[in-house]
Length: 362
Ligand SMILES: [Mg+2]
Image (tube, rainbow, N blue to C red):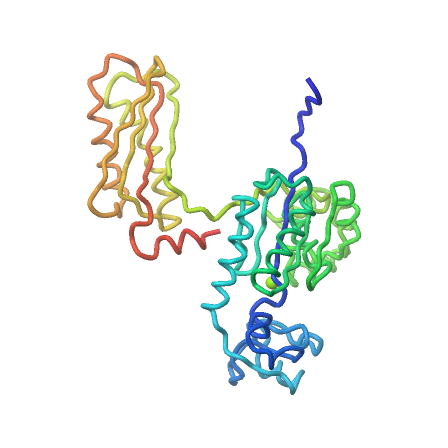
């Protein structure tokens, strides 16, 4: 046996970010805008800049800035209305390119995504080569540039993609991670907003190294729940997985009884917390489903499933419970003890709009 490591090999994460996305699309499609300061958005009194070209950024114009302010900073600024259909189409094209390399794609917006390429579909050795292949393909297909950051976790990959913008690539290797974070001003940390950065400054925390010098307990007392996150990222550690936006096919829960169950009353009682768990998740995420599936595993490990599909989506916990207990009652009487029960809701997203909600629920 070679290398029986108990730690898994480091992950390979890429953060891809299109450069000045909306503005670059407008400059691509209208040659007259090229090389000029462009803002996507409305020049009206209450308008806001949605995106600024690099030429406009030189004047201090940036996204989310009031249009009036932007115009003051850059009198030559050209405002163009947004064209979301076109941006969405480009977004679809770049996602197709990502998908040639990995199914583990977590979009952050139309033009930004994390990719886990630890196992990549084209079996390219290094994440750096995957990132270069993706950037080249994006340029070839869309005639737009993207920047990429490569590292062993999301936190560092995101910081890396901003290092060599535009049209750049930056790699933070595992060995270099901790030192990189130590030297980084806290204001550049993803997840540390201006208000938190200000508070950190008052506490004498200006860099990753300052953050690292603080104990977990003191960070938690100063920053609550975020203290834990800061503690770990200051060490270059971020275990958050890349969460693909695939639509979930079913939501389910199961549990093994401490003692085998023989009668319907005990089984129903055992099923109730599972129903509550599934329903809580579904209602919190506005998920509706039509098919309820019960799973029964007997003491001899034989397993059966029973399902029922309702005509319209189940809209309340009582309805869900009724269908579920109906399925459960049908497996009684039983001579074999039941060791495990599971319940799941599927046929999700039948209602218009559900699909969109799920997709953007990240
Ligand atoms: Mg971008």
